[in-house]
Length: 480
Figure 1: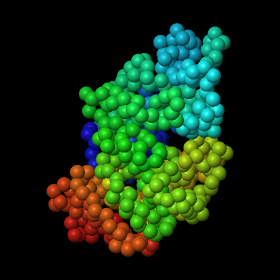
Figure 2 (figure 1 turned 135 degrees about the vertical axis):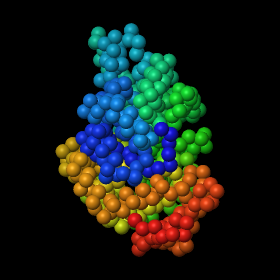
Figure 3 (figure 1 turned 180 degrees about the vertical axis):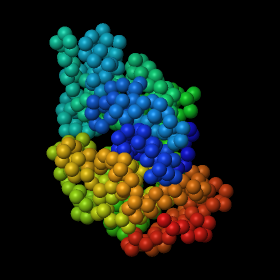
């Protein structure tokens, strides 16, 4: 199915019900009409990071369902699958073969050797300090081969996630075969997870290394040229990085919107948000929440350093059960640039403020992505957090099928679903259309969306101090 300009749900295969079949039932009933696409977070066998350390892309983890279940979903909704272009599990058949056979393994060059990467007498401390790291030590892991010999491999993320060497022929073949297979099973969009980390080059910070990163992107695009699927590179950093991607014609993420929206609602001031919306490309997916934390660094220079600090401090002050330690090493947080919380709890579990945030997202340029916890205005899950001591699990609640049915009866969730249904059916939100943004006063924001021929118009007038708003479509007031 081709990408449609409708709300995309982000969900794990076992978060809205226990498997893909129950998720499909939820979409058919409780969320009917509110969702047009599904980003189905990794559903492959995996050994860590809730699916992001895959062992095998060729099968669906049996606890979630089968390829038939996935393909059935793809007949009704456009689908996004993840491909971890930077790494794969150390429990994968590829890694195990390498561990058993060393240099004689046909997968020996699939993995990026730390030892072979550096010239003699390097890396120096300055080399290690230069690397854009996700952890406070050099990003490698030592492997012990079957014959007792040892070698260090690049290991950017968790212990289970061993980095691939994207320069090598065997890796390029693995990427092409895997992507082709994912598209054959229904992927309309391939999300390139950890894309900016995939290229490593001597004397760089090993993050978004140019021009080599463009060569990699071109290769992936060529792999999919005959498949009819789209690429979405995932980059959590300063907005200038995704803007570079956008200039090459790709879809991007708006990961800055969460912090800018929080700042605007906390402060009641609209100027920063208005300026940001005027800059954004239309060919993007917007987010307020994802399976990770809220990105702080993404909003740098959209907000001043003082405004970023204010927003972070306010989040901890007014957020419901949001504590600094939940984003620290104590709770295994891998990214110092993210804050772990549900978006609803970041706004103090306040229905009016939360609905306002979603209104702003719906009217922003691009296609809205809504994380499953956000779809149900979910609070921070402190029980799961403490059970696992994993910071990001505060926003990864497992909803039973019955629980979903109960949550959609809440007034705020009913209003949200009606908002998303309005967004899905209104022609005013044409990606080829126009957006006009103004600030009638310090606290007010007016956003007008029109389709390409200007025949359909939707307008939001919002007051971020009082949380009052009015939505009209072609002059008629819309109630949610």
